[in-house]
Length: 171
Image (tube, rainbow, N blue to C red; front, side, top):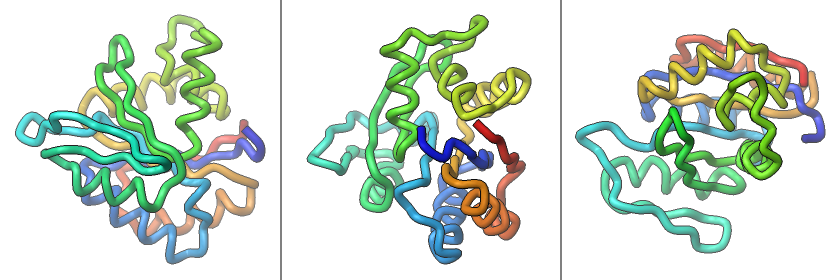
């Protein structure tokens, strides 16, 4: 991925992640360089399905309004079943990074496809393990990709968010 610097932030729930996306957008960050990764549901909010219509994805039930709103803002969306992690919903340019990890079978050192994709962004192994645990705990990862200065701007915007953590990585 061109300009593979990234900031990865963790959010406890989809409402916090959505507020952070809006804050980053207000900072002037290009939305086409923003990705989100999550399991897409909670036990009381299970969607019954996803489908794609052009560059948008729709969901029935559950947090469909959350994901549906993101499809309108972020470029690209996909639903994956990752062994060890279960169902993942991904929106933004990270979709192509994850697909590349899956198609290329670039599983590094026992990492899942998600871990291999994160490694491609320069995320170290110990952070990958931590992020996979966050996903398993139904948290959301928000990833801002781009040039170093753009990523710094996104990181600054995240300081005003409800992220439990945010780290910058150079790919």
